[in-house]
Length: 389
Image (cartoon, rainbow, N blue to C red):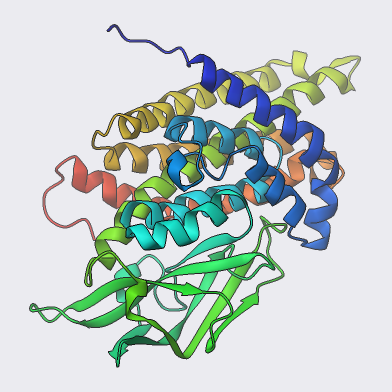
């Protein structure tokens, strides 16, 4: 089959459906939710009703199984309108549902996936700690096996979807012992919200994604059954790396969608705003800004969609995921910056959408591995000699 850049009919339908939903239901309320730092259960469950949380899950567990590219298109279209709701979806699928679907046993899948796909509850991925960010392998949270139970102690921070009123399960990475080489043995364990000894506190005062839920997690002699181990003992680091590969695609989608939204806002404003008797878009300096934005967005979309195509076809995609995440987040930065500049003083006011795009952009260069970490990952994949760290 020859090279084709056409989306399937189903993928086109997904884009139209999600765009309509985002413009009709998210756009009218997203500014108010952002100002109030209010997580919306209603919008989360509406996304679930559209099948968005079940995108990568097979139908036997309540999913729609439409494929990774369709899922990424849905995140992109929501991010075009609002980063907070896109973050809820992206983290809910890539970080919450994904490890359970790919590494859970049959009992775990049957217990959790239908509720997660339907939006009854949300899942989170407990990875980052106060002193373990980019160096995620240095987790200090411990889980000791005693009398058939994992006893967990430690804390996590900046965990999306972990402390909302519908947060139901957390995939917690913990140190479960020592390996033969003396390094920490890391495993992932399912910890239901509400378990005794597990406290999830919402975090407030964020610059961006203010209407998404972010939590600090505390584990104090928290006990869960031994059967809550995800996959095999000691596979936590591998599970984490694979989960982050998929998460980078969804962060890339948020960058791409945000860049598209900022570009469209700038383009529309450049046609309406007049200075010196003519639309500001007619000045070459501004026209070139928009030409650069459109070109960079197209480049980012091609790279991201290729990475998703590789994943959907069970091909290696780690390098491309890192590249797509890096490029999409940095293209969003450029587009958000140009959009604010084109709006002038109005771009600094929250009544104009570009102000929110400008704030939301920064996290994409930090979450799911910083831009610096992506360059390390890419350098290793392309055969740069020695260790890049």
